[in-house]
Image 1 (cartoon, rainbow, N blue to C red):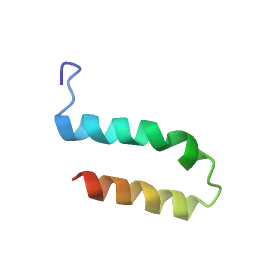
Image 2 (cartoon, rainbow, N blue to C red):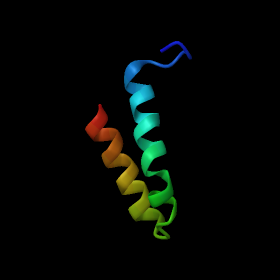
Image 3 (spheres, one colour):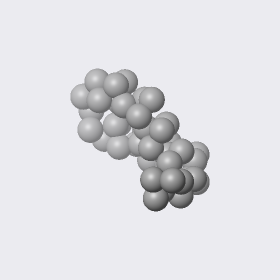
Image 4 (cartoon, rainbow, N blue to C red):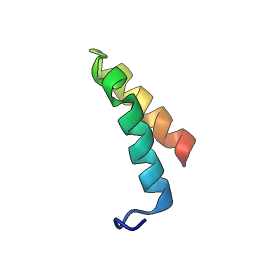
Length: 44
């Protein structure tokens, strides 16, 4: 929050950062987008 992010937004960034290496290794772009959407949905 001290960096100008709201708590939810900061949490999403942290979760995405943790899974980034795994997500980036997925070649299927549709699957990658679905995973990112699910992460966002779960954190909303």
